[in-house]
Image (cartoon, rainbow, N blue to C red; front, side, top):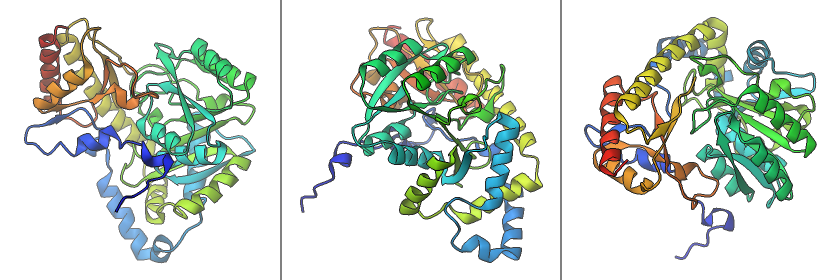
Length: 396
């Protein structure tokens, strides 16, 4: 039978990262391609104790339908933590629990953007968000990054040149895939531009808790006085990615519409995991747990940067993140990225080509993303040496 797929999905390609996962079964393979948290960051013992307690005392609540907005104790705990840690939460704000940060991104675009509306994003940016915007018929325009974050001059140029700009999607802290953090001055200018051109900002901050060096920078949401910033967060990187517990904080009028959109998609997020998350926060020291994760990633990031400094040709540049789980490498002019990635894969070392993170995947690119949270210390050292050898062989 000939299946006529919808126009929205006809040209949509699967995540390059998920496709790479299918090739990682070979013995001795080294993956720098994942975006997974390190399994050592999962509080398994504590979660087991909590789950046992829930099934003993509150089985019906855990196994029954819940409200779309989310498990009330968890919502209140997240609101309180956002206010305490990030200064987020105005009287007109509300918060909804979503099925991972990905759903928060997709629902925002679904509710706030019409087909054909322009969504501006950092270039490069998170592939899951890019595909969500594409699937909903938004027109994607990439704005380049520099060392300070999104290029504000290019951002204003894009705002002037494109009609129907509805939304700026940004990951300002430990950006995925680049690993850089937007500085305070740039954030202030971005907010000014958003107000000047009357657009919304979707601030995605799944890595913000993972700072292991440098100074915290205020979130867009904490500086927003006009209700135009939607803030998306997640427990994926601090408790468990598999639980799929995220949250979206925005003006209550926006959240009320997102509630309706979520009812169409999945009715509500998994109640059991919402309860586990809430009771973990109530019973244990989440901030201490996060501190331990930061120390783990500080060590791993330092090891990868040291290996790159000692082995990579000087013509290969890379970012030095202050947190998060990624860094970004760029080959010199003249080297073919696809050939580099292929040679690496032939030697069982897997990286994600930068084209996967581009607003325009056909645009030229010489960069690739490296993850340091998942590989072992030995794999980091060995894998970087192999990548460095390939770069030299190709003339870097």
